[in-house]
Amino acid sequence: MTEKLKVVMPVYNEEGIIAHVIDKWTQKLLELNIDFQILAYNDGSKDGTLEILTEIEKQNKYLKAINKPNSGHGPTILRGYSESIDSEWIFQIDSDDEIDVIYFEKLWANRNQFDFLIGNRINRQTPHIRRFISWFSRLTVFLFYSRNIMDVNCPYRLMRTEKFKEIFNLIPNDTLAPNIIITGVACKKKFNIYQTDVSFKIRQTGEVSIKRWKLLKFSIKSFWQTIKFRFQNKL
Image (cartoon, rainbow, N blue to C red):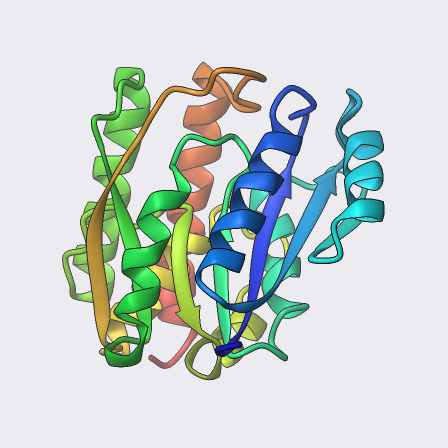
C-alpha cells in the first residue's frame, strides 16, 4: 500500500446515487493500491441517505459514515478536514457524481511534485448565475491572494496534509465556502499547485440545495468572508 489518504465527502439528500458513488470510489482507490478511508458526512439528509450509508458501512470496511445535523457544505467539509489531519493526503469530492473518478488517477500520479492538486471543471452546463459566481470567485482569489487559479471552488482537490493542517484550524467553522479560502491561501503561500481539466456532468439525481436569490445571498457573504480572512490573517 502507498500513502494514507482520507476522502472527505459531504452528503445531502443523495439516496438515489450515493451507493453507486461510494462503490465507484472504493473500486478506483483499491485499483490504485492506496491505503485509504472514505469519510461520508451525512449533513442532515431528509431522505433515505443515512439508512443507505449505514448499510453500506456494514459491508464496506473502507467507509466511515458520520451523521450530523445540517450545517451546510462549507462547515461540513471543514469538519472533515480537521478530522483527517492524521493522514498524509486529503481528497475532497462531492457525492453528486458530477465529476468522475477517472480524473483522480492523474492527480495521484502527480502528487510527489505538488502540494495542492485541483480540478478545473469544463463543459459546465450550469445557470448563468452560477457561472458568474464562479468567475467572481476566481477574480476574488486573483485580486486578494495574488494568483490566477481556474476553478477556485472546485470540489475535486487533493491536498498534502502537512501543508494545509494549520490553515484548516484558522478558518472559522461557519465559513460558507472554505474551499475558496483554502485555494487562496495555497496561492499566497506559494504552494506548488497542479491544475487539470475535469469534465463536469449535470447531476442525474437529487437537486442542488441552494437556488437563485438564496444562492446570490450566500455568494455575497462567502466573498466577504474570503476577503475578510485575507486581511485578518498574516499570510
